[in-house]
Every structure is written in C-alpha cells, then in structure tokens.
Image (cartoon, rainbow, N blue to C red; front, side):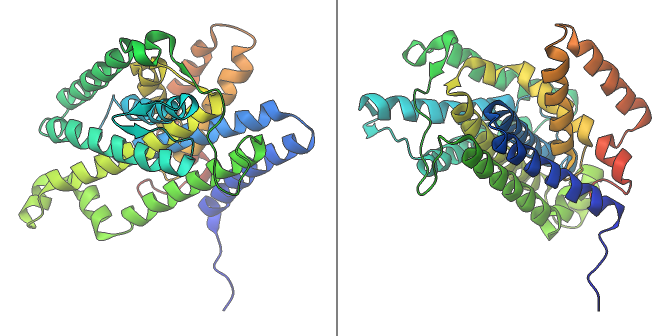
Amino acid sequence: MGAPRLGRQGLVHVALLTLTLLAPLVAHLLGEAYYVNLATRIVLVAMAGVGLNLALGHGGMISFGHAAYFGMGGYVAGISAYHAFDGSLLLGLPGSDDMLVIWAVALLACGLLALAIGAVSLRTSGVYFIMITLAFAQMVYYFANSWPSYGGQDGLPIYLRNGLPLIDSQDPLSFFLVCFALLLAAMAITARLMGSRFGAALTMARLNETRLATAGISPYPIRLTAFVISAMITGLAGALYADLNGFVSPAMLSWHFSGELMVIVILGGVGRLFGPLAGAIVYVLMETLLGGLTEYWLFFLGLVLLGVVLFARQGVIGWLAGGTPHG
C-alpha cells in the first residue's frame, strides 16, 4: 500500500513548518542574526499560544490571565540566572544557569500557580471566569512591579543567556532550533491529549457539561487538568522568551500580553492545532513590518482581525486548509 495522502490541511501544516524552519536557516547563511532571533520570537509566541489554545480552543475556557504564567516562566529564568551570576542563595538554594533546571522549575511554578488560580476560577463561568483570571494575573503583575529585589518596574537583566548541555545556546540558530523542537513537542502533547479519552471528555465539557456529568465524569477536574497543562506550556515559552531577550520585566505579566495571545489564537484559528503558529507569524510580521512604518500599526491589525472574525471565523488555518477545528 502507498503512503497516505496528506490532503489540503496536511499540506498547509507541512508548508507552515517548512517555512518556519527554513526562513531562519536562510537568514543564518546570510549572516542575518536579527532575522534568526525574529523567527525565534515567532516560535516562542506561538508556543505560548499553543498553551492558551488548549484552554480556550479545546476547553472553552476564555482565560484573560495567561500572561501570568508567561511572565512567571520568565521570572524563573531571570531570578535563577541572577543568583547564579552573583553566587547568592534563594530560599537557601543556589541559582542555576542550566536551562534544564530552569525549565523544570518554571513548569512546576506555573503548574502550581495555575492549580491555585484554576481551583478558584473554574468554579465560575462566562464573564466571571474571564474577569477572575484577569484579576489574578493583575495581582501577579503588581507583585512583580513592586518587587525591588528583582528590579521592580525596571525589570531584571539576564547578562548571559542560560546554558544547555552539549548545545551552544549563545548561537542564535542553535537557540532557535531548541525553541522550535519544544514548540513541536508542545503541539505533539496537545494533539496526543486531544486524541485521547481525556481530550474527548474535555471537548464534551466544552460542548455540554451536563451530558458529561450524566456519563459519570465530573467536568471540573478535567478542566482543571487542562488549565494547568495549558499554563505550564505557556510558562515554558516565557522562560525561553526571557533568555531570548536577555531581560524580564513586569510587561511580560501585563494583561496586554494576555490580549495579544488571544488575538494570535483567534487570528490563527481557535481550536486549530497549527492556529497559534499561523497567528504568531501574522502578528509578529505585521508588528515588525508595519510597526517600522507607523506607530498606528495596530489599526491595520484590527482591520485584519475584523476580517477574520467576519469572513474567516476559523482563522488563517481554516481559510487556507478548510476542514473543521478541534480535530
């Protein structure tokens, strides 16, 4: 038997991945490190969007507070590097500039924060859920903003990018490839979850929680688990983003970034596995190209978003690939 045909949707997905991978490789060969770093930013914003999409697109949880986890991941990277740099202790433990350690701590910290926030937030629904996730995120933002030990509103620099065993993390292309591999891993985890019985239960919790409850499955723990996994993916993206910029600040925790993530997911296609990547490409390229021409580039982004909402409600991926979301 021959190999299965990809179909239109599969071809669009392959084209997206190929474009995302080849563009920085060409930029590297041309000696354009700026464009390699730009591609890395697209990948990390897309990874954060993959996290939000699990909660929003697949679970129906309209979280306006995912910047809290993105920023938490960033501060884990920044604070750990800070203590590793000056040799001081944090809670009796030394800092670390090993990315593997930082990623583990970031995943744990974001998971625990999401568990606490989700345990309260998921007892509400609708606009109340939106507002309570926003309120918790703003609490974290103001805490970081008034924390003078780690820069307060001025932020915290990372003087030297954290390291990774056997890989030169200082090299822009190597760092991009690490981030790209982790984006693929996040998407693979999401696909595996949504293709399992857990994913079926999460989908039913979004569509009809009463029917799920009558089947003997409580929607609350299903949603809470998805919410925590979603936050952990977004937090890992935040830790990498801080290393990319060599800086972490309360801006990573701001509600503005939560809004940007939601725009990215909507642009790409809510509930689409590759939606966050497509949305991140559109958003970051518009910000870079139009932002260099006018400070009012958000006006044009608004027009594009309006067009997507009115004429392509399944986002860029739905428009290009067709098919159905959540599949």
